[in-house]
Length: 257
Image (cartoon, rainbow, N blue to C red; front, side, top):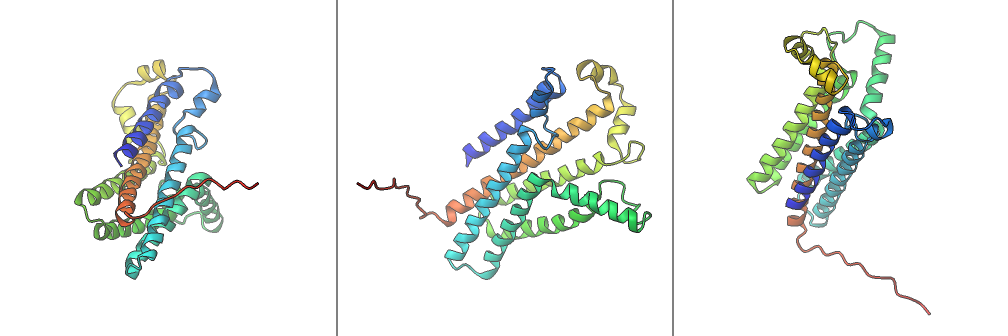
């Protein structure tokens, strides 16, 4: 599992580095190359990596559910692995198709048509109204289930750390969705309080506020990928423990004459 952590975290740090220098730092003036390394875009290299990693987490969870069924474990344990497998399968589809953004936008349009004054108290993205309560509940279930299921304390704390990273990423996304004049907009507060506009325009050709928003997105994406890496390592270790006698054999097809 150490190799999985080292390889994945190394790649994630590389994405942050490339975004800083190649994309935002304009190491090249070729727009296509910069977009490839833009960590905040959904069609960049980091986005592909994150989606692939989430898919691998989902596949590992389906394997855990299959092993739990094969071993005829108690119903609650089988159900727990099934719920997590379905949850991460949804997240894989969501990463690839931007489902929560599209459904959030649809919800916002329908809300405006039906009652423009409804939910005006919520100042950020519409998708958070729909999905944060659901995934918050699923996150609590995952923490409870894995705390019971995982035998090693270090694995339990690793899960809690990963959930903390995901929660922090949602918080950063919430701030990003605020209007600049909103009292909770920490980026606007930092831009007004600290004068580093000269540096950001010279280094990145952007204002300090725009620069803060971009690197907030960079941090958000890094935290999400880091959380998936930690969870994948935990689930792989659990799979190896539950299916220690599992062997895969690859046999070349026999030739016929």
